[in-house]
Length: 89
Image 1 (cartoon, rainbow, N blue to C red):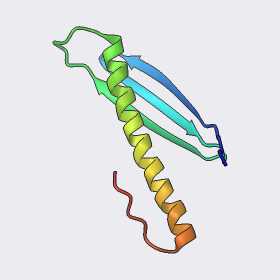
Image 2: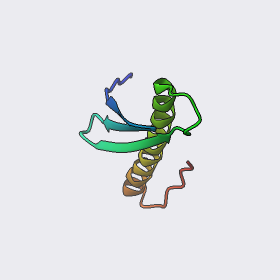
Image 3: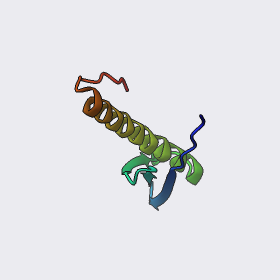
Image 4: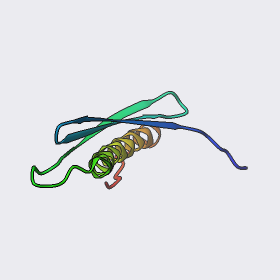
């Protein structure tokens, strides 16, 4: 049997001078929401490239989100098995 579930990821960026911030929200099908942020700082000598700052900030936010999701999965496993879960990041 195949089961298909849906989740939504929203990301927005904010730029202030040489700093780019990415905020990401994951909404799982069970109603759980996880949120993470990532920040990129441009070196003053580097040319302004908005896309690069967004990519770095997004990667950092998604990396944090991935760790949160693994932590949540570990808790969910432990609730069912009553054993310590060992998920690696």
